[in-house]
Length: 549
Ligand code: NAD
Image (cartoon, helix red, strand yellow):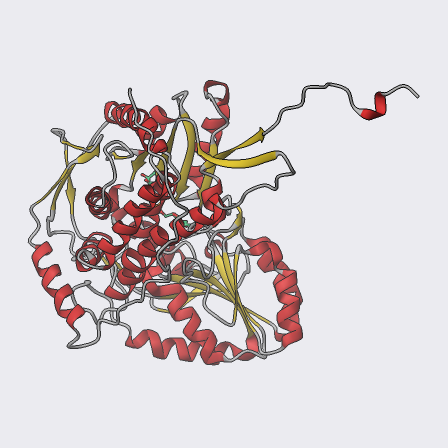
């Protein structure tokens, strides 16, 4: 294919890049009225969402329902389900688009993503919010910080980080010019995204694409609605055909085709540890098939903790737990899901949480007063209900708050607090991904032993929070818990990381910790070439030390 090379003629400065301000949606605000109108419009449904491969809409005769989790009898419409042949089409389109895309000047690639960010923050703000609210059951605040705030921040800060990465250049000595060229990877990238964040889904393909790669993107089947909109916005922002190819098919189908292709250059994954493990194994088995060693980037599960000592403030702990464990129904990888509270504080913490949780209402997203909405689907609902039922009859645990669930209208699990008598009770160890918090109450003078338990109870190390008012203790916990979390919070809830402020990712079985939205993540999508140029090349092979005395 013939490509045209356009050379940049300037070392351009970027527009000012700051975090997107979050709107409040207060009563009578303009944004609230606009969003309500958009929700009413989109609720009417009629969706017919095709895949987008090589810039073209691809439809099949296999239609799949799209229904709001909070109102599962309401049909919003359909998406077109693809199969392995569509994955192959997407790979072919990505490889075809690659030579032109990687040659495009960086400022043009940057402009596309900056424009997409402005479209999301501006004309599409209430559309992307309404789509995320209806499709993934987020309340307005949760949607605004995800689908608007974080996605816009990802697209803008990625551009700034690319600029800084490109500016990282080696030194040169006299007569020599050394340069570092930040090449994209050879081949194509596989972006495999989870249901729970529109921002993460948009970034998994977006970050590698910005760096000059082309992408096959397979979103979660329960977040197709938002993924399709993000793709349309990127197209409107000028993303050329084939740079990102959106396919709707099963994860195993997509993986089988992608991971067997010699041009597979890397995976950008966010999702569960189990799925990531399987893909890592397949990649290892296939390693001799590939032209290059693929980059394997995956942010996975969590069993995030809150640890408080007896000097901490009970009201502050309770607030952090209520927000950290129950916002977005606990379906954040960072959600607080196990807490270690000293016996001297537990009664107060419990009372404050009861006060808060009794006020919280559970329901649909169109009623803005609901703090808790539905969990993502029936499978998740059934799994969570089973954990609650088991706790109800267990000798090792009791339900102290909540424990109710109801799926008649939507998949509603009420905020639930389990008190575990054993520090290794199942819900202290496993990721549940729902609005269920388990608390282990320890004897005030056993804080040190409790830190050991905390460290060893779960295989994950994503986020964690400590509460204390003593500086020496804070310093000690911070050191003692070094490897228990990639995002560590002192006197704050363990959720709500903001791009460019708390670079996000965990260790152990929580992922490769490449910190989405930071320069470290972008480095995974390039393979630098060092170029040394000699201005007046040597003509004598001899070095002075070899001369005869
Ligand atoms: P998931 O692992 O079920 O799905 C993620 C993606 O993988 C989806 O696109 C899905 O279709 C695909 N998939 C599922 N099974 C597959 C298989 N066998 N082969 C290939 N692909 C397959 O995750 P989810 O339920 O969508 O998201 C929740 C999970 O994501 C939780 O474990 C959560 O902790 C994690 N998460 C982590 C972070 C982080 O930054 N660490 C952020 C968000 C979510």
